[in-house]
Image (cartoon, rainbow, N blue to C red; front, top):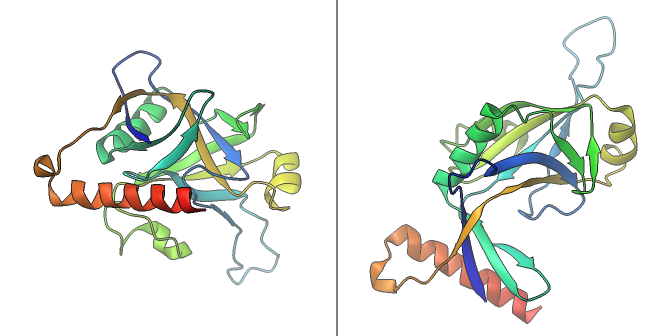
Length: 198
């Protein structure tokens, strides 16, 4: 199967246009729904209505299929970082969809960061273990219908991005690869072998 690296080619449309909340995230990472804790207040806290999870994970093979072929795509650490910055500089933080099909209002990316240290990252507070270079986001859900009928019921479990990227097929000789490259490609081969034996 072919493997494509998705990159930002410098075109005006390149980058992430929207964040979709979906039942089956392509990066296979679920988000968690955060609620307020009580802090010795006389009244019960209201829900924060925040979803927190990975938006993009670098070097993670993502299976794809179209009418012509099956293949894998992945994003490098540099592309993940650049895509996260471009998303905000373009002012797209209010762009959201449900299952990549229906536009949603009332969802806003309120926090966004790149994991720099796996042990000290904020995501560890919520028992999430993301590799260095992962783009993590927190999305505020103001829409009652989305919160009550999709988040609380478990119909949506994670994030998936929508956007435009360039791609290039990967054909590297083992002699050209560094240790990180070799570990990445071994991971890709393991995922492909697992998928083909299922």
